[in-house]
Every structure is written in structure tokens, then in C-alpha cells.
Length: 194
Image: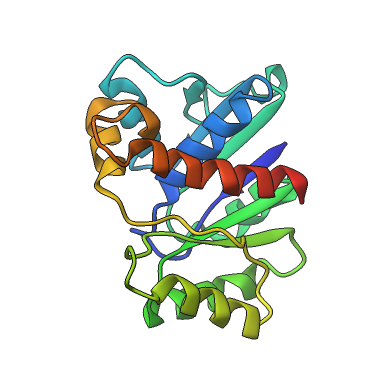
């Protein structure tokens, strides 16, 4: 698979999503994560600890033909030509979005830019129960006919702990770490099934 993880808006869990979708795909075959974001969040994450179970490289060093799966993490709001070059090579464009009016407005604008590409929105940073923000956001996407994953990613401290430890969320020192990983497993299964 070739998966592009991109968003018009920053701070929506784009790099966290790219890391964990790459980890899911690594369970199925050799995987490369291309960190095409100038902020190099995925590269910094990979250098923090013992390393990640897949290769992470910048666009200049990446050798995607050596891998079964490639995940590309772009900068927030990538430019039109660069965005289309990456999207042209992708089997799926994953667009993380958080609940809230500004994020959803940005998503709707971005979906227009990506018309014609295989796209799915992923709702991230969802406040835990009793908040209904996740369900409301999914209902909004359905009403607007925006393709989306049926599973959401909850806002959990385990993700930040994973970054600090330089590891995947399931290995983070947090009681909800396994639950956090299971959320990405559900999204990953949905991704490869679709």
C-alpha cells in the first residue's frame, strides 16, 4: 500500500497517525515512513528512543521501491503541486481532523482540493466519554458525504508519552497505551479492507 497522510490544518494528529498506520502496515510487510514535513516530527520521534519497527527517512534518503508499504507524512497544508504528486502515487489519502468547527471547515476545503483522489477522513483527538464530539463529528462527515473511517482516535496522554519515549503508543508507560494502539489497529484494518 501507498498511504499519504496529510491535512490542511496542523495539530490534528497527522504525524501520530502516520507513525501508527506505518506500524500497522509493518505487521503485514516491510514498511517505510517518509517524513516529508519540514518539521521532521516523525524523524524526531524515531530518534528519541530505541527506534521504531519500520524505517523512517526524509524524502531525499527514502528508497520506497525496497518496501511493500510506504506511508508519507506531509507538512500541514502542502502546496498544490507537491500534494498532487504525492496523492497521485497513493492508494489512499488519509486526512486527520479533530472535532470542532474550524477543523471541519478546513477539512471541507481540503477535500475540494483533493477531489478525484481516494480519500478518507480520520477523526482524531476525540475527547473521551461522556463527550459526544466523536459521534457528532462522524454524523457531520456522513451528512456532508465526506468519506471517513468509522473508527475514531481518542485524545489520550499515552500518545504524548510515546513521543517522549520514542516508541509506539502500545509501548508507552501509560495504563491506556494498549487501548490507544487498538484504536489504530481498527483504523488499519478498515484501511486495508477498503
